[in-house]
Image 1: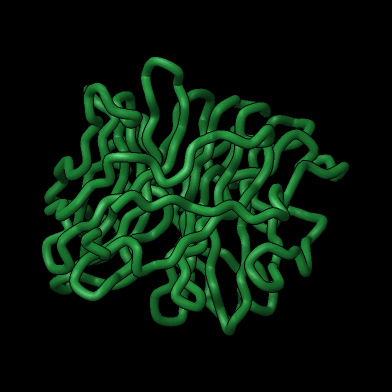
Image 2: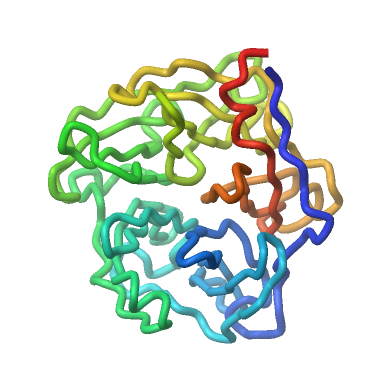
Length: 303
């Protein structure tokens, strides 16, 4: 079955402001739902061209209820001197675990920081030390790291996209977040398709009845257009792809998706489930933030 996302008529939800640190762009938010409230941690860039993370809270799925005038997460370590980008947040136990990309010149490396759930809700920004996820790959450009929301066979499971020979999605496992093993390609680019140049995970996979739903972005080589699609992964063996969509869930069509800092881009780091609907938050043209939704049951319907 072909599944499509429906945009909110309130799009774009967030746009650049006059604040010095977010006057150029706001995009690619990580999103969590806590105690019935939706929280956005979004990528922002301003006058100094350094990317930071800002914060907003939503009422319903598409109304901004609160937005802080200052960044809540900023570069601290050598591997992120040029910014932090694309937060992807997983809630496990009493913590929010954030994977993100640290930028040093033209090099991107995947990194991790955590915060206590209650501190986050109460806006006490007590983030843990920023650390590289894969220090052994310090010389490899890597992005789009995301953590499964529960352990599988007692192991943490991560998807990431190292740029070696190809730009495919890899899987890796760990017992402690610092030592990762069994690295394998699981989702590859498809020649002749809308995702033939590169692919990367969006938000943390969502557990359905007997599988994992993963939203991902794909890039078409001919036009360099970013679109969103999905795969279903085996519940107990997430290295196995059960199903992969033929057509994209969402592609750039609206003016704010087609024109911006980078034209023809829809790029997601997050989604939440509310009232049996999948709500996908995304960056549009690397400048603004939008949201789109569909019924969750559509992903497992046979026809």
